[in-house]
Image 1 (cartoon, rainbow, N blue to C red):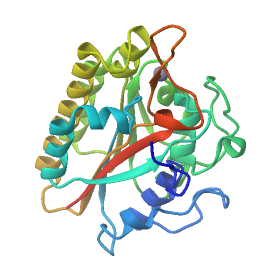
Image 2 (cartoon, protein in one colour):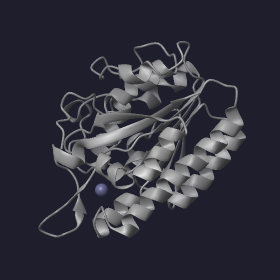
Image 3 (spheres, rainbow, N blue to C red):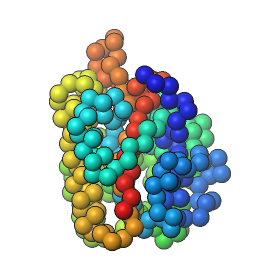
Image 4 (spheres, helix red, strand yellow):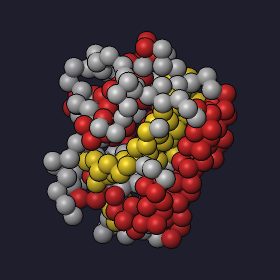
Length: 266
Ligand SMILES: [Zn+2]
């Protein structure tokens, strides 16, 4: 495995989103990581008006390598693959707190599998005052459903991934939001129950990509002609625990930490 320490981490996503939307700096904590220059180089100078963020749990770079035809399809559709490092410990609430605050775990305070409401600034604090109407669609009681509460955004808690997709499609069609974050978790559920590389788990990854394609198609149909961006942003990877034979994650190196995001600007 390649050393990922020189890559921007998923914490760069928060300030990248601020810059991509053309918003003033300052909405995040001063310590938030800098924007990812590789992404800014793809974005229109004046920024985009609409942003769709799809956050599937636990899809690391190793999964991408196991389903090359699925992910090369995303690249063929115009998505740029951007390798990024996760944060340690590579657990879901820790990672999404970093991704949307820009802070390392010591900065935002979630250092283990716990889901308190964050008290630091996040993009969900930064966007609404700038007029960016924002929605979070997540499976009920998941990390994303809980840790960003109390902001001026619309929250939708859904029973499962399919319901989250239906809700997000309704919201996209209604057009009342400028930024929508959608979270799915089926692959993470399956890799813990079995292992990350079996056919049933990989079929869930395919469903995640298909959901993303469905969401982006609806997003493009709604906002065609409007400057916009779509982002596929998983939190961490996974590996097999030799003691149990089942999938797990949380390590500070290796496949748990190796992630890739996909961005498309139109
Ligand atoms: Zn997990």
